[in-house]
Length: 81
Image (tube, rainbow, N blue to C red; front, side, top):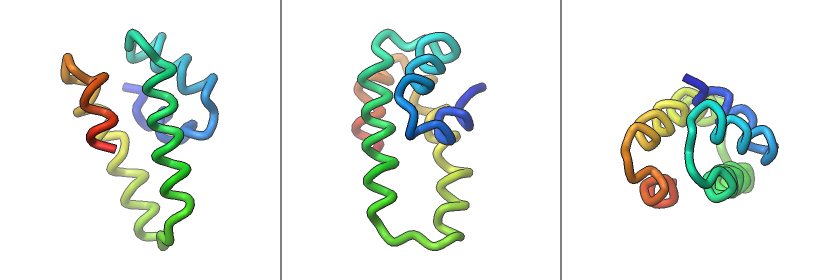
């Protein structure tokens, strides 16, 4: 699905909300987009090498897939992040 885009565009709230609303069809895209943006911003403050960033770029779409497959995604995403 669109989970790679979700992670790649995590610095653009309007794009995130559009993906969340239209493609993933969540009820409150603003809440999810803020959680994702805050998580990625917090990561930017930490020391990560190129390998760590590469691993995150592969891992996060899988995390999103697992979280949004669950009916209680609104509660799961903030807990996972």
